[in-house]
Image (cartoon, rainbow, N blue to C red; front, side, top):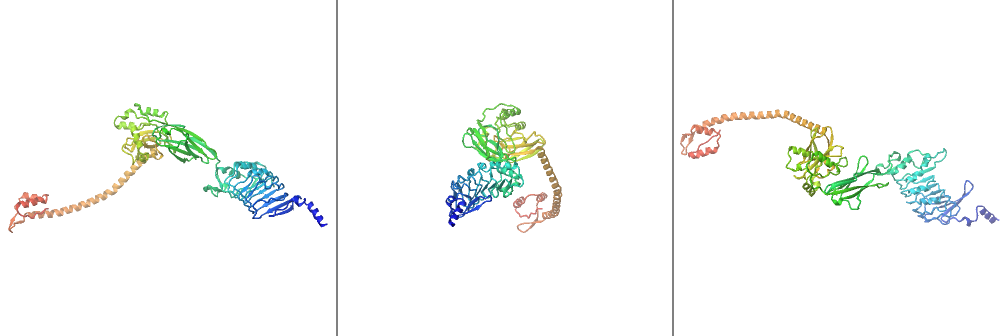
Length: 623
């Protein structure tokens, strides 16, 4: 009787044990009744020796929890038979690989929790097999990125936890799926439509984080965060700064600012190609030849104050092999536009044009040629070679001829001088210590040093009003390191460059000056010199006179005392007796003229000769 009652009780609970399946040996199974009266089975497996999900899970299981096991991977369709499964928890295992088919057959799944595993990637496409999924917990894994295509499978979620991973940014496509939360109506008393966990990730705070920061700036009632304060991890200057304190710029693709499209330059000259671009982040600039040949020059990178990235390609001593198209590329993650610059290397001119005024020569060189230009980034591109007028080649220049030379525009040296410049390195004749000395409000003098330059080295001076593109040339005679520029405008700012004849100047060979400031500074310096000299004279002159007078007085006293004694002795000595060799005495036989001779400033040599000639020894005394 009791056996029959037991069988009827089992049938009332839902069928035979074979139909329901047995509980896996490594798990615990429990059956409980839900609030609506339905029954739900929960299976919990936490055996640390378990390496694969159990194969014999009862098909009526609604909650499956595999935690703290040694499971490393979940094979495809591992849970296909669990059609009634609503909660799948796999926390704190050793999972590193998930199959894209792991959710096949789980049409009623609402929660998927995978915290504390080793997942470096997640099969986002597998979420299409779980249309009822509302909760996805991927906390404390090793995810480094969320791909843009993942946004298609996350639109139905109300809870997403990506905290404590290796995320540096989120795709714009994912943020676009959450944009409707900012405009959707919010009903008081209802829970938030989306709960996000994004904290404890190494966020890179650059322009690619702009949309996320902007999304979090406004108050969104339909959005809640597990941890509201998000901080930057890099760059180092922003480490630890909260998102609410950031001022980021929106990303922009590179926009090129090319230089000239075509350049013609003679053989042996130096050519400088430049190309600029703007973008966020700042683009990487590069040069290459369109024909694939290697570059025969150096590339310099710099960023101007307005954020423009510039790349400068310097081609020294160009030859016909350097002719061709040069490609400038600006690249960031949004694009890589390019621009083309053509270089034509021409042979040097051998014929000379006759005569012509400086104004006519200026007009000829200004047409069809690229004049030297100056700005804060580029000193000059190329100064075309123009032959000297025939009148300038006759004889050494006089004073008037020198002034005429100083007014010539774009005048280059003779071919012989250019070959001498090519024979020696350009750096050996670099102009150094360029200074401006003020003469007047209409003229200045430039002085420089060139330690390695020879007596035949010729320099040229380019000058122009600051900001103008065209520059005038002053030819400096060989061997000189100074020049005076006449005809300047008062109260005007100028730029002047000194370089070897036939070469483009460098930035360190230029100086900016104002005519008023230079003249005033020179006048002030002269006034200071005059004042210093006057003060020194006033202080030093009395002291000098006092010392000289004292010395003169002492000298005069000595002369008076010494003169009296010497005169008396001289006259007495003239009247002394002389002694012969035999001991007898006699008066001196010297006449008055002889006494005068002894009193004169003759040398003692004459006296010695006179004594020897007389055959006697005479004691002489000089005053």
